[in-house]
Image 1 (cartoon, rainbow, N blue to C red):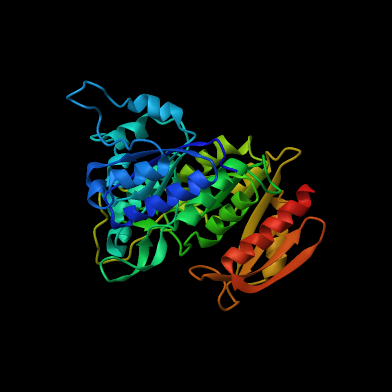
Image 2 (image 1 turned 90 degrees about the vertical axis):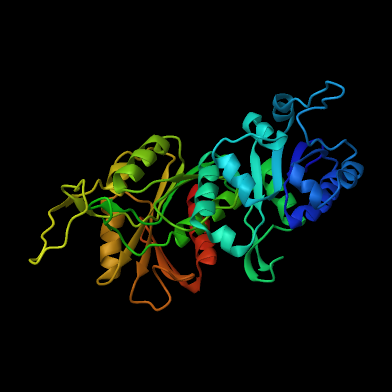
Length: 399
């Protein structure tokens, strides 16, 4: 599957650099051509000789050789590759990539690369969870780069948690998935919304909700595994997409989400609106922090744009729109009304009355309703499994 592919492997200064040798062996076994670029600090963890022997090519580290006058053309390297894989990717390298710093050969090649870029973070759990690192990862994904999600386990610090670089076999699977494009939804464009929206009251406060985005991200992953190219438009959340066929678009407000969806809608065949979009926003946003008063505070609210209604009204032949309804009373009746009024093909009914379902949980229990009167009950199970059931319902409509 990777035979003949030209893979640039970037290795940075992490204890996980030893796994680069295993990645090279797996790539060469599939008859891929591998060129390794190491950062200077990476040489402290594994020798260039080891990686050169396994890849069959000299390892590149510096921009050139001052003694001979030869140089390593980072532009040519970026054009040569079918994929650039940075594994391990340290917090320092992620920060540099995120902000366009190119003070070594690997970073300069990254900025020159026209191929897909995959990065596999490797660091201690507190470093990975730091807001700066999370923001850098999100920025890199918003540029179209592909996150290879780090694993959970024992770390070099002695702590246990997320931060381990993905295993070499997993990294190969990401590349195989990218180049194969297999699945029942191969060639389809999907648009998925996820998470909450925040409507600002002032520079400090906002109106929001408890959505974590877990369900929407799980649906995006399931669609991508079936071969779809997914645009994931997400409000503020700590969730991270990992599949190489998912492009993340980070937004904040309902208006932001609508404007992004508006641009992506016409080219999408599958639209899944799972975001918990605010129904109202402050009519007036204060430019300064609202000060506490002795008396009560009255806020005047106005409706936000109804994304579901706007997109449903534009639905064309060949498009499938799936909506969500989170209800606390008269659940099915309200969901069926929304199904018809918003011109959905399917609606996924969540009830907050079901223990273990709804916001914040890793599990969900739903009912999938169709315009034809069909109903599929999905019992309480992991949201990733629920996502697969929803995607299977979409596939049936496509058949």
